[in-house]
Length: 253
Image 1: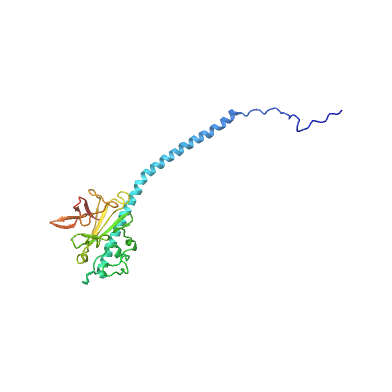
Image 2: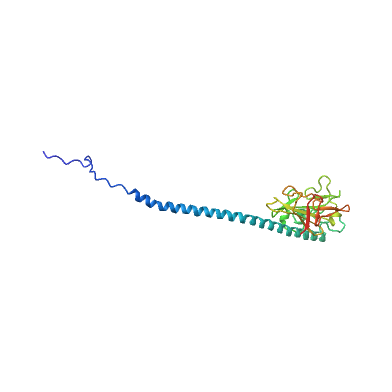
């Protein structure tokens, strides 16, 4: 009887001779060059990081110094604009609470045409300063890394701010407000947005101090009529190129 051919599925597989193992030594030799390249790249990358760190260490102080100088220059220009605006407001007679025909100086919100003028309830048209000065919070305005606060003479002989006007008897002396005002500017954060504080009054001179004795920064504000002022034969005057009553020396800018 003729034997059937074996089922190809059930038949034993044909085993061929195993292939020779790869030459691992040659493979390892080929891998050495990339390792050297990676090592060289890491060294170069590390050197680049060191150089970048040195560049940052050198450049950052210059960058921050330039920013501080820019902020201080800006606030000096701002105070000059405020002085010009006060002169325009007073000369126009638009603000005349006592009705004597003599114009009075105003607060920042009034000058910006945002807050109604005292005594009339009308807005100043046209305003004498930018509308951004009308963003008054607690009597103060923040602009360009600095805080601004305007003061007008009070009936008790002191000074009144935009936030304390009419509060606790702090009423404006309308006659004195025809000839006097003052405004302070100090950094929002000392050393970060500015290094010096500034003051200007109705005389038009801008004074600056490096705050060596008393610091003004953020919520720590100058004292109205004290900071930047000294006593001269019993009379209070601006401490131009001299020490004020707080121990800070102010110089004319």
